[in-house]
Image (cartoon, rainbow, N blue to C red; front, side, top):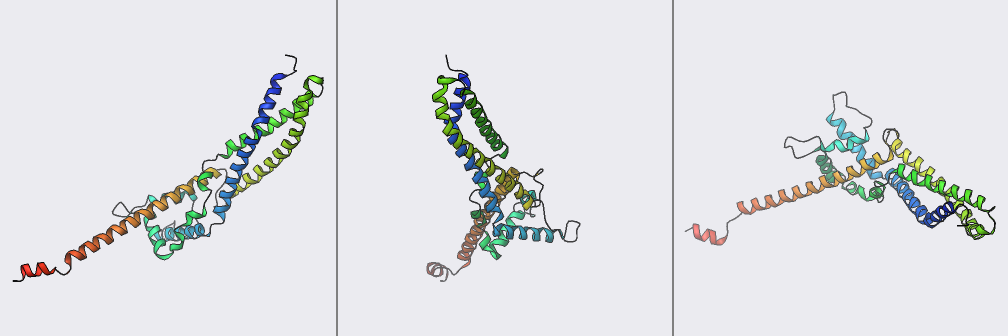
Length: 256
């Protein structure tokens, strides 16, 4: 009853109790975003596949206004399943996988370059920014209450003693976290620019989701190609057995 601003002090202690976990979660998410950006930029296999897609598109559009293109929009990757052959089953994605598998098989496992892609697809930078700002504001309120408590006398003596050391350490950590967030945010915006997109119209989340869906569609098409090839091989062997030499019993039975 005698503690001044007891509600503010309780909020400060609550912030202190949650600080380490909250800071660790934000830092982990930032590292995941940063890793995803670097993995995508450094994937030579993805670059090669993008070149093949561009070449394939130019071949299909030869002689039209869309031919001889020097690039394509990132969301075009997801349209490879829209173009179908006359059987209405085989898509351009199936054809791409078939060509790559036969001529550049080393590219088929390009998804292994993206260790952080799926985890990064679950992170929203806006929500992360809100969490970051919440930590900054929480520290500001702590510092404000600490200054005010220094004039409370003996009733706030223990409070001040326990919070001073924490405030110094937390302040350094928050500054480090803020610098890391700024760097990662710039890297995330740079990922859109890397693909020739405007970060305002194609934010980090859209880039990551598009690439993740492309990876999934690519792998699914390749699996379907493999299953179809295995089935065709099985049917060929079955036909060969049917048309092959008759057994000795069959010859004896019908050759008399």
